[in-house]
Amino acid sequence: MTGDIVVGLDASRNRSGGAKAHLIGLLRDGDPLAHGIREVHVWAYRSLLDALPDRPWLIRHNPPALEKSLLKQLLWQLFEMPGEVRKAGCDIVLNTDAGALSRISPSVTMSRDMLSYEPGEIERYGWSKARLRLLLLRYVQNRSLRRSDGAVFLTRHAAEVIQRSCGLLDRVALIPHGVGAEFAEIQGRPAWPAADERPVRCLYVSNAAPYKHQWMVVAAIEQLRAEGYDVELELVGGGSGKAQQRLDAQIAQSDPAGKFVSQTGPVPQAALPGYLARADLFVFASSCENMPNTLIEAMAAGLPIACARRGPMPEVLADGGVYFDPEVPQSIAAAVRSLIDDPALRSRLAKRAKELSSQYSWARCARETWSFLTQTLRAIGERPHA
Image 1 (cartoon, helix red, strand yellow):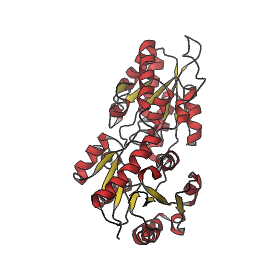
Image 2 (cartoon, rainbow, N blue to C red; image 1 turned 90 degrees about the horizontal axis):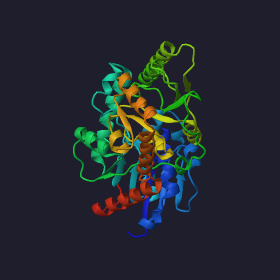
Image 3 (cartoon, helix red, strand yellow; image 1 turned 120 degrees about the vertical axis):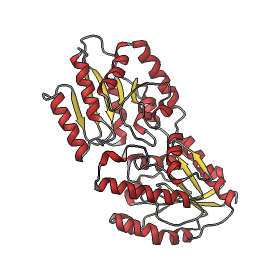
Image 4 (cartoon, helix red, strand yellow; image 1 turned 60 degrees about the horizontal axis):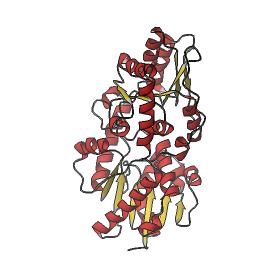
């Protein structure tokens, strides 16, 4: 099969920023020809296809159903995609989302979601439609992972937790996402502020959600200001629903005059390096992640980081930051305080975080993904069938 493998990528459900960045990085920085892959076919909606790099081996597919409702997208994936894969002559398919409904073999499925699996997280949603959706999603993802000939997890933590639910899988690869070079190349960050020069700028990049705990960070910053620290917080990512309402209420209580907390809505990926360049310190208070992309971007930017000791964060950040309990404002405040008070600690951890970020490259992600696909195909030695 060397030099004659045809790979299909189901990117029909790639709607999040991380999923889009992954697909672009995989195709931009990878060389499938080096792994014996002749063609790569991608099925996705038009705006995502337009963002992909031009490569001679890349073939785009835009079924009309992918521009329509979610129901029509799922029906296409279930009933029409297997035929399109056969028509394209694909030898193996990578499902870039574990919620894939299509029955195609050989296939490899990538797991991105943790919210359905992380112990204690689903209970944050009470008995709501959101909780029922997460329970259904877990069922669908477990089914997809079991049916696949291989599975890709982004962190060891995710692989261990998810396989407690779906069962041990025969063929598994740990392939973390990469981080764009633009984050490591940030220039011109201002020097740490001298006393009374300006506030220490703390940055937290993430949408408001029940497991993101932005309101706890706001309360922690309020506590530090009450202790006499000149510190401010910028929240980037926007939000909606009950989590945003809870955040709004905390901001109104902690900073009614709007002096030290600001929130910016969702921003393009290309704008994030600018926000990191203006920050002095990065806070990451999520209690549930599969692959914490914004944390890795802050690591690459060389910022000192205060981080939640939950999920895969200690696996990713390792000894490159200070940790806290994201549901205890006093714990968050203590972590931030330690970075403000200790210049040597601040410098050492920022340097270490940047060093650790170098292992997260799109070139590595692409190389290991193409390799796993071809290894899986050779291991099972068969062509696709519906």
